[in-house]
Length: 314
Length: 288
Image (cartoon, rainbow over the protein chains, first blue to last red):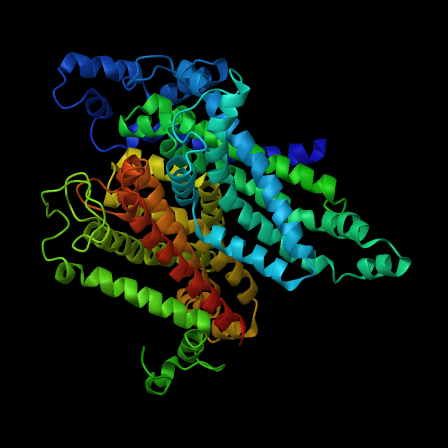
């Protein structure tokens, strides 16, 4: 394990370094003077000069980069241009909302993805399989935002069962908080779980053809035990990989879902930041998103080796 | 598509011929359904100026009117016909993906195959593609919006860049299996230039999975446009796109559900058409 982590470190550091450079160069890639863009069309020269100092544009490029990176490591994430508050404070106020959404959606993703996959991969009756495959194809074609809008229409407009706009933190009020969280999390998880389910299904059907399953049947192992201990465990590999890769998509999907359900999370901050050219906020969010995605991928590979001892991390 | 017989002889290939192979894709039920859906959607988009000569900005007196005989999907907050705007939105979406995806396909393929001509450049490009792949989808789009500014150009750039890793890695994989084959070595021994071998000899043999990927990526491209437009970073009003209409429509979802359902349905049909097309192409390509 330690050796594996040591071996992977250089490539992870390379990706993170490249990301940090791209994020750092972002305000400088914009055509024209970024300070003037930020200040707006009618800003007096003094304001532009002040913003230039604030963005650090008056120092040499290398110094600027190391100042910025040093700030990231010491917790000084800079000052938002738009909200005139520290970036750390803005992110701190919103990170809870997004984490709650991502956790519940991740939980749904695992339950529905693997559950549907098992159902489709082991159903004996033909119609059960057709039903599962039908729902799967439907969700595969539908992106999270359409599922979200449909859920709003059904549960918010037609039946009026659940709130569709705004949020209450689960930590403040578990009952109401969960109600506000349910629809967004479902909208985020359902379309992605279809992809996971399809992977579980195909690999379960393939594993069923293996010799060790025949052996288990011959030994007289009960069918349920065969499905769980022999087939399922050997089929989860691709699903785990898919879950790990999709964690990044989950974050990206959260941006759109937060907009549709009017949740005030990190996604909304990213959208506001992009609309208002708020570079200090965007730089931190971009590095953070890539960091989380890279860590998720690393955890995937580690849990894959726990599931299947043949996968050696060495 | 021309008859296989009339294809110029020098383009004929030993096994079956490329054109025949792709025309068989449109003889399967999936292929037929995909062709009908796609042709229908493209025809509607092309005929938009004929179907609605007033353009997407023509206003009527009643805002947010319910669906009726004269306005099948009702009217929007400025009294503009939603169906007309949906059709013009479809036009925007098609104009975007049908230009951006081919560009991404060509650049990505060339980057992937470039390892044959220059090994170090090929490896370097694979590292670059890995880094692009590390960015969660929408974050990449938002970054490009920050640099280019919201609008058609940003969406075009975002789709092109987002597609590069997929095409580049497929092409590279094909290159690695093909470059040791006898016909490639023979061509080199005969003194054919490396760049010619890459384009004329290797490319035709790796093109099948690339075309399937292009069709799959069309769906992704539609969703990139819609996602960015829904959060307000895509096509700018008053110009309609399917995503931009969903953005505004979501605000009026309880008063006028058809504002969301109309564009949403067209978006789904478009995605469905390309999903079916990729399935049909995949079948035709694997069944040689």
